[in-house]
Length: 325
Image 1 (spheres, rainbow, N blue to C red):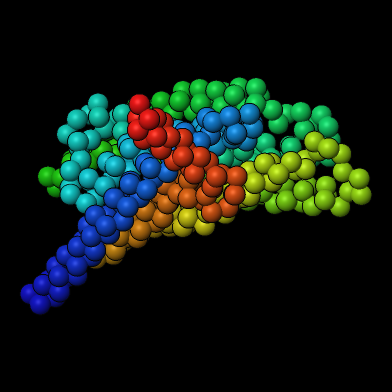
Image 2: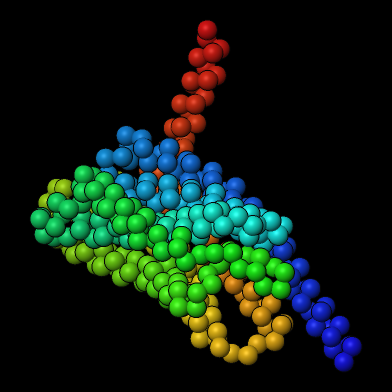
């Protein structure tokens, strides 16, 4: 019996050690590259080259929410998982704000990408009236509407979250069982499964529309994707969608497993393994939120040119001018 207990203890400690090491190694990489990438995204998207494009407005909104998500949710997860430092476990106000910000930013980013997909679908339409919806003033309005809706709707996260104490261990989560079921279904549907599925559908429909346009014998100037910039932006979006689908679905599958297995009888080792699996899919879910700049750089020549222009402008402004004074 003692040997069995020792083996269990050793197995649990080994899994916990892997969890801590995984958080300490991977999350800082995501934080560094995510912050640099999203700041560069914002700088590039507000430049004249891009800001007149309606789809870029959604990219810009997504980059802003990702930047907040990185420096709130991912950063706090890093300290909690990597070093067991969690201010939300001691401060109720901090707990509720953390839960609310994570809820809002987690849902806004996929919504903005979905709007970008819808924008490209409308622009690729053969119907002239449908193409008129792909304009910047509509994009600004939709971004504002979506932002206001989710910031108000997500207030339930402030009400439902609290500090829970179990076996002398405090953590910020949900205490009410009914609300816990609601949040599980909410996360599965609105965070992990529905957005990537809708992105994939809209992306495929856009590709179909583009191919129809390309088969036209006499394409009309300004229709669909005649302009090179629009083609590049479509490539950026489609690759973003592909990455979102690949890295979001594992988290959705795990959440489904969590709901199904919630009533199962699990030993301590299995519970610890499940926590490791959750950390892995959570880190995978973080990847698209930190990789936007690098996705766009790899897929679009017009986007790759912007960092070069920024570097040249910076060099001339701060070095060449000072040297000539």
